[in-house]
Image (cartoon, rainbow, N blue to C red; front, side, top):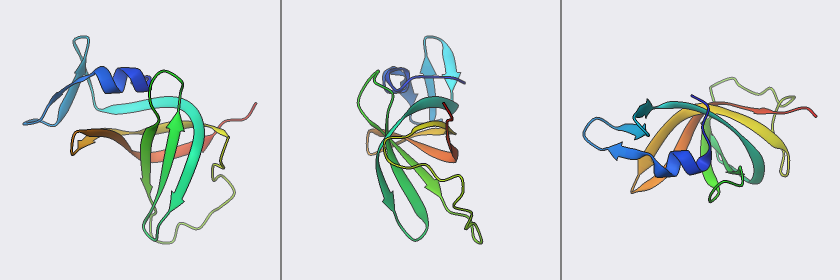
Length: 106
C-alpha cells in the first residue's frame, strides 16, 4: 500500500495481531518514496534513515542475503529511493523491514 511516513506513524497498532490500521484500512506491506539521510552498514543488514518530509525520519532495515554482492543498484546518501517492505513496531518505535530499496532516476 502506498503510504507516507506520517501515515505509518499515525496508524493504530494492534499488538496482539501485530497489525496496523490507518483510517479503517489495514496496512502491513508498504511502499513510500523519500531521500536517504544516513546509511549504516552491518555484516547482515543495511539500515537507512529515510525522510519523506511528512514526519520524522523513518528507519528502514534491509537484510543482506547470502551471496548478494551486486553493488550496481545500491542507494547513496542524499539520493531519492522507493522502499518496499513491512511496517513493524519494536519498543514502540515504528520501522520498515525492507525487501527492496531502489534508487529513483530523475
